[in-house]
Length: 152
Image 1 (cartoon, rainbow, N blue to C red):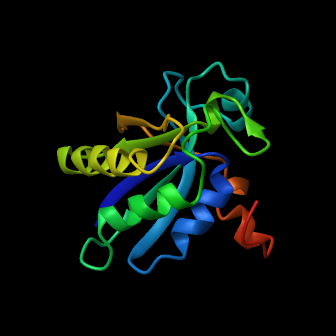
Image 2 (image 1 turned 120 degrees about the vertical axis):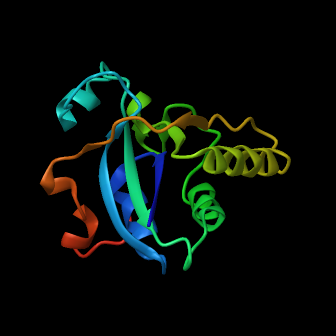
């Protein structure tokens, strides 16, 4: 199993999108990319932690490759919006790929460059080495699925 971590706005919708992919063994919503230890949802929403709402995806690379996960990442949000997605705004909603290996870093950069060639607006997605991932509170896990919803 391998891990991939993505931030693309509200983590509820991101989790739902990745959970439906064959080869994805599990998804966990949480916070990463900041400096604050053991953040809560309220801490992250204060924008004082530098964390992003993110989804950690555990996947089987024999069933789904990292590039396929990147393709889905680009499709489920607008990577040209700085620190927002739709009605959600703030640094915690930024677009980011948190890579777990040099191979993931190279794939993410190449994927971003390929998409930028097709866009007239600048893609603002960060590509950053994965740091500590803090699992969000239990009520956030599988939030939309628990409510019978498929999107935010």
